[in-house]
Image (cartoon, rainbow, N blue to C red; front, side, top):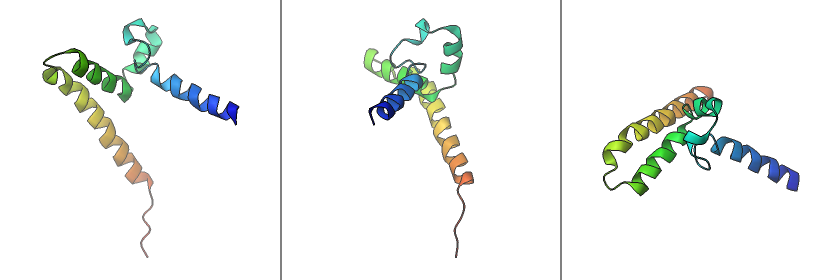
Length: 88
C-alpha cells in the first residue's frame, strides 16, 4: 500500500515539476522547458504567480487564462466524443 502511494506521488511530482510548480521553468533543462510549454499547468502557474506578485496583472494574465481555457474546451470535446450515447 505504501509503495502504491509513493508511485502515485512520484507520478504527480513528475507532472507538476515541468509545469513550474516546484522549480522555476527557467532552471529546467531544455527538454523539460519544451515539455512545459505544452502543459496547461505551466500557464496556470504563470497566471497565479502574476496575480500574486504584480499589482496590475489582469493584462498579463489574459494569454495564460486563454490557453488554459482552450485546454479545458479541448478536453471536454475529446471526452464527449469518447463517451458512448446510451439511448433506450
